[in-house]
Amino acid sequence: MLIVIPYPNGEKYLNVGHDKVDEIQEMRKQILDYVDMVCTGPWESDDLDVLFNGIRVRVGNSKDYFMLKIKYGAAYEY
Image (cartoon, rainbow, N blue to C red; front, side):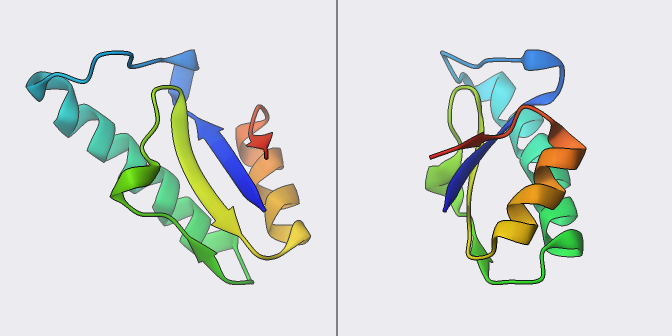
């Protein structure tokens, strides 16, 4: 299943300039570190999964989705 974990504080990046790349990569690292810590099943996310409204993560276990939903609340499932 695909989920999008929103950026903190509802941030959206419609235009990613050079100055925002480091900020977005730091948020992505924090999100993926948490995903790696709590997910028990296979999961995947790469550089193409950086979206304007969050980070897309593919998880293979519904329990993992539940754990991410608890932490991030507004995670969207696709």
